[in-house]
Image 1 (cartoon, chains in turn red, cyan):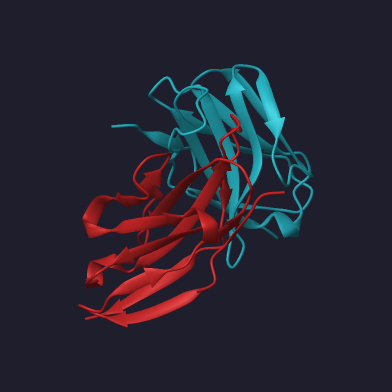
Image 2 (tube, chains in turn red, green; image 1 turned 90 degrees about the horizontal axis):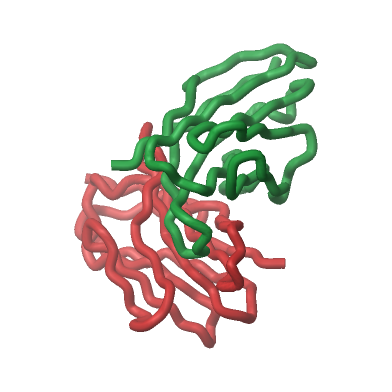
Length: 114
Length: 114
């Protein structure tokens, strides 16, 4: 069965620090990969997605993620975080076999101190 | 912009009550989903629907049922609410049958069962 692991449950950074959130998945075939973000009091929204092509994908608000197939990873990065990046971040994956199911990781709560 | 509307933001119900959670989307999306979100567990899929009157079980369907009589509306039903169903419930929708359509989420319904 597919699974998604986010190893950091809570991350605390100061503004301007660099961010990397880990995401690993377990599935041997073609996958589609997503990062979603949930700001305090708001609904979940898509941050970025990878389907194929360039393994380095850029999303909104300066975020990017790199798909490393050999490591089954899709880590999220941002070179310089802002206080407004305080949110919960979810990695998600579905298998590229027309599965409708999106499997989410347990989430990482990021707190950015001003 | 896609709008997914969940009828209630907060609900408090008693054990044994029948509970209806309603979700409406305004973008003619084919796929609709119900997730529950619990701290440390991320989002877990309860049920999804890929067409009117069509439904599929997710990972944790026990104790729940769903109804999709119209394309825009997807209802989650707790036949006999129990305290372990206290959670945040998220509805989502996505475009066509493709497996790479991002999900659009509602604001969630926080259900407390006493």
